[in-house]
Length: 456
Ligand SMILES: [Mg+2]
Image (cartoon, rainbow, N blue to C red; front, side, top):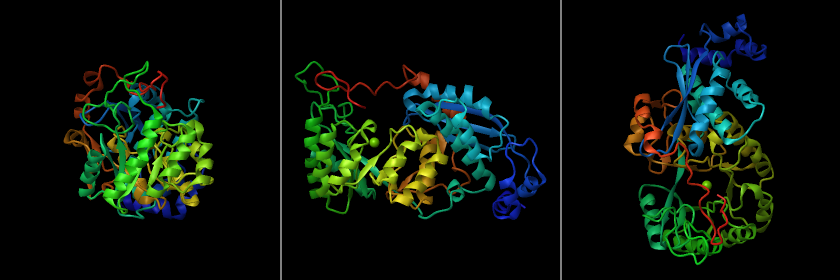
């Protein structure tokens, strides 16, 4: 019997039920467990380590590798919190590794629950990203042992591929339109539109030499560099949507990210004002500290709302989903602890008619994108997937990196995530030689004209 047959027998047979009801964390397997494994030897975690790398095309990227006592069986998981990468490396190497060595990697749920309480104080991006690296590596191991891709372990495909959206940007309506048309020519059907305004450091409009949308003009106030005022931005957004709808027609889906930078009354106004342009979603109209406003927005208009990339805990989504106050969950999967909690949020969303839009920015590793895609194709609650494409330098380090075809991401069909990481090359692209500091301090630098800080 090969491993795939053994796995199927284990999950389907009555012997599997025996193992299910047996007490856990026993040193030696019971006869029922041995029978359930059909002769597969006990597997144990022998090593856990963080790999920190920054090949051109990726920022500071953290991946976890888990090795086992079974020859050639190991897994990879995304633990990338690029802003504080070395803090995650410490959490993995110095805290989680000693806690996990010797444990059974098959027990993914129990390992997640024990990691969750292992430092007593829980939540937060450092610990959750470290846990995500472990969790995703365990799913990779389970897939490799079963000889199945992870999406098959999650229930199998309900769709063949994930429809994606790409980021169009420009420093004028014309250049933004050109950027969007470039993606549409590649087959993309969903486009996020972000535009720079001279003198105002708008979010998401990366234009040549402008520094994240700031086109450099005196602010007339005490703060001049990376200055952002919400009113000119808010007034520009309906004009942008009007122009893009007029030029792209009704069938292209348009998205926009407010990035929580406006006041709550402006958010209400903008949501109502954009209704006529039917955005696929408007993201983060209010900040994580102001989620009470979603009820008011819901009562005022039908504009689709996406929220959640900055939430620290999966529990922060529960009220917004169960009260149907948002349309899309924007979960950064490594930020909430991995695939194990994410698949529960997908299931919760399905019951309440909320859809998934897993966060897929440039600072999610290719392993993390594969985790997104596995959930996309196996969950009925799928809505849309934010996508990236990487230069060949990244494909050389991450073999099996997803590629876009006609605006779709397809899952790898190889066992686990279907990705292999060249550790020698990853080490060559070390963070310390590329960056002056191991941490990313680019956030927390945009201020209003009067000098007060903008979140985020
Ligand atoms: Mg966002």
